[in-house]
Image (cartoon, rainbow, N blue to C red; front, side, top):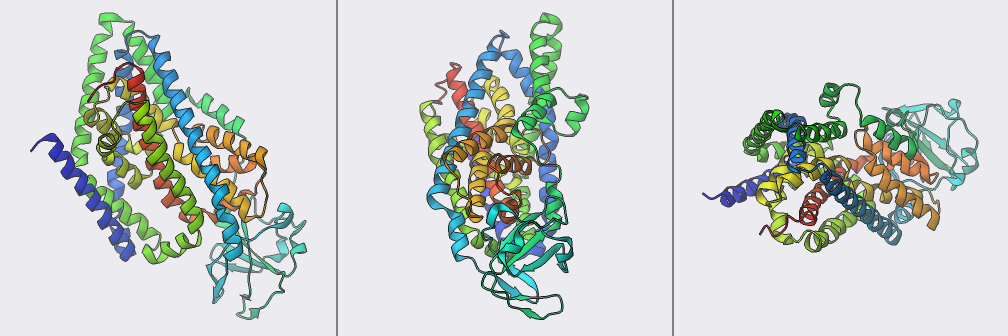
Amino acid sequence: MTGDGKSNRLLIAILIGIVLGMLLGGLSPAAGRAVKFIGEIFIRALLMLVVPLIIATMTVGISRLGDIRRIGGIGGKTITYYLATTALSVVVGITLVNLIQPGRADTEQGRIAMRGGELLTDVAYRIYDNTLTLDTDTFQRAYDNRYMVLLQDQDDIRGVVAKSHDPFVSSLIISEWTDGEGNRVTPSDQGVSIRVDLAVAEGIKGKSRSIGTVLRDVVVGLVPRNLFAAMMNNDVLPLIIFSLIFGAVLTTLGERGRPVLIFFEGLNEAIMRIVHLLMLTAPVGIGALIAGRLGDAGGFIGFGPEFVRLGQYAATVLTGLLIHGLITLPLILFFFGKQRVWPYSVNSVAALTTAFSTASSAATLPLTMQCTTEKNKISERTASFVLPLGATINMDGTALYEAVAAIFIAQIYGIDLGSVHMVVIFLTATLAAIGAAGIPEAGLVTMVIVLQAVNLPIEGISLILVIDWFLDRCRTTVNVWGDTVGAAVVHNLEGEGDTD
C-alpha cells in the first residue's frame, strides 16, 4: 500500500467517524455523552504534544534559517499575511451581516412559547434607550438559574438598579405568562418580559477591558515569569518567543551548539512519529468528540430548535466563513502560494476535520504540521515558523464571527450603527482576534471588547451562546485552513516554491 493509499484510507475513516458520531450524539444524546470520554482522551493526547512540538520545531526551524537576519524577513511576511487575511475576513462578515440583517428578521418574526412557566423559545426585542436593569424588589420568581420579571410598561425599564453584577439580559415580546403560583398573567400590548441569566452573568465579570489593555497584556505575556508554568498552561506565544531566541542563539555557538540542535531535531522527528501513531485513533477520537458535544446539546431534538431560532444569524456566519474559506483563501493560495488548490486542500482535510472536532487550533497543530510538511511538501523550515505562530495569532474565522455577532446584537436591540461604527468594529475585531493569544476564555473577552468599542449592550452575548459551540468549530476550521495557506504563501515568497 502506498503512502497516498494509506492517507486516503485514513481520511475516509475520519469522515465515517464524523458521520457516525453525529448520528450517535444526535439520535441518542445519552450514548453520545457516554462515549465523550474517548474524545477527551484523544484531544488530551494532541494537547500533550503541542508544547514539545512547538519548542522542537521552532528551535530547529530558526536554526535552519542560517543568517539570523532572515528571521525578520520571514517574520514580516508571516505577520503581513495574517493581518491581511484577518482584515479580509472581517470585511466579508460586515458586508454580509449588513446585507442579510439577521437581527431585524428575528425581531420581526420572533414569538414566545410558554409551558408551565418554562421558557421554550424566545427572541430578543428592542430595549429602548439602551437601558435595561432591574430593581432588587422586582425579582420574585426563579426558574433554575434564571430570574423572570414582568414589566407592564416599557417606561419601567428606565432607571432601575441591577441586582447582579453585569447580568446578561434579553427582553422578549410575550403574549401571555405564568407567574410563580401558576396563575396566568396577561400583560398589556406594550408589556415586556425580561430574562436575567445569573449563571451566564458570572462568566462576564472582570471581562470588561479595552483593546489597548488586551494588547498590552499580550505583549507583557510574551515574557513569562516561569517558562515551565507557561508549558503547563499551554501558553503558546511565550514558548514561541523563547524558542525563536533559543534557536537563534544556538546558531551562534558553532560546534558547541550542534549537539543541542541534533537533540531537538531528534525530538522533532520523534514527536511526528507519535503523531502518526495517534492518527490511527483519529476516526474514533473525532467521532466521540462530535457525539459527546451533540449529546451535551440534547441531540438533534435539543440543538435543532435553537439552530432554527438563530438560523439567519448562524447562516450569516457560516456564509461568511464559506466565502473566506472557499473563495478568498483559495485565491490567495493559487496566486500567492503558487499551489494547486484542490490537491492542497485534500491533503489538509485530516487537519481540518480535527480542527472541527476539537475547536482548538493549538490541539490541531501536530496534524497541521504533518499535513503541511509531509503531504503538501512545504519546507519544515517555513512550516515550523509559520504554523505555530498561526495557531496562536491567526484568527480569520474568529474575527469574522465577532464582527457579525456585534452587528447582529445591534440589530436585535434596534440600535442603528453608522459607517464610523463599522470602521471601529472592523479595527477592533481584527486587533482583538489577534490579541486573543494566550488569554483565558479568549472568545468571551474579545467579544466583550468589540461590543464595548461601539457601546453595544454586552448582555446581548447571551443571545448567541446557545449555538456558539457549533460556530466555534466552524471558525476554528477556517483558522487552521488559513494557517496552512499561509505556510504555502510564505514558502513561495521565501523562494522555496515549485514543489509539485
